[in-house]
Length: 446
Image 1 (spheres, one colour):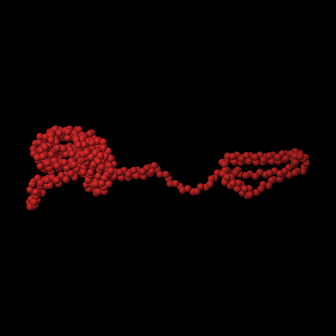
Image 2 (image 1 turned 90 degrees about the vertical axis):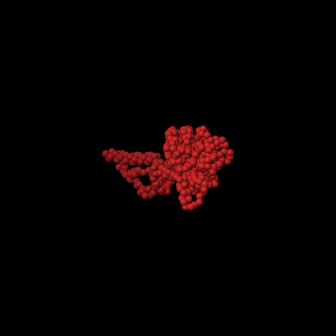
Image 3 (image 1 turned 90 degrees about the horizontal axis):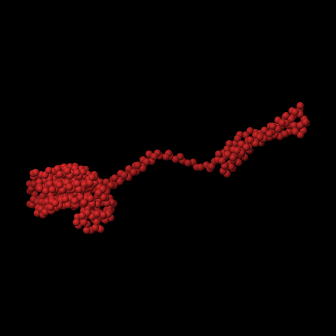
């Protein structure tokens, strides 16, 4: 009985011993698995790990093995027993893997939130608007466009010139021609002034038909024409319209049936102001007059006559020659008309049907000289055909000249105040034999 009890006790102790060894084996296996699954440690981390393990071993007490008395298997029948040392397993928590730690970086400032696309686009939009506004200011205030006609000795247009072929001066200072515009690409607005006063007489119908053909010949779909009638006072017969409409309106003008005065200066002034107000600034502006230019009823002329009468009443001495007295008045009136045409940036052309009779008529000669002055100062031409049959050829030359114009563009470096007249001179040194016609100047627009 006692032997059986001793055997059972020995078996029990053996089971306890074997069970503890199995637990240790499982624990070490789990730890090894965790070590395998851990990310590799840096040398600094391994050193820190070792230091931590050494500290733990120093703090934790050493395990004292428990002593139990069990019968020896060699002497199982003996009642005496020898002590068997069995290591005692202490339950330890599973080690927690230490995360890989890199060197501690310096604290970073939190970046501001990224701006939304709209907030990013807004400054760019503002910058673009400023640039566009600056460009508009620069173009409208400093860009000067000068229509220039270059013809040979036969009056035919000289084509193929480039910006480097021109020499342009403003107030005596050389200016750089930035670009030469193509006249065909710039719309044309024409004011045609048709003399319906009694001085025209039997030439009326022929001139009327020739002028209507001219409009159909020169105007393209993008161009327009306005029709003015020269009589005792300015009359706008047709506002700016296409060639078909303007020419049809011109043909419906009635011939004078009684003595009708001529207000040439007032009508030309009205046409210039009309173009300045109704023709876009980018368009070319042209005034074509069919008249002898002998004004006898414009307001400036009538005022001059009144002033002469008052001067005589005051006892002032005036030229005894009536023509000389009228000459002073007409020169003043002509300068006023010239300023209006130049302010409108218009080119003035005239066709005087009086022909050879001008050589013997002092008033007619003075009137023609006045129209020639308007043409010279604006870059146009004044024609005096000897015969009416030459009208079609003259209109053809004007049409060809307008199509072959050079539009010189330059940025003025002048700081002249608004309204000051600045003189212009254009030459073609490489083509000294060519005739160059351009306006004599322009009024600064700030």
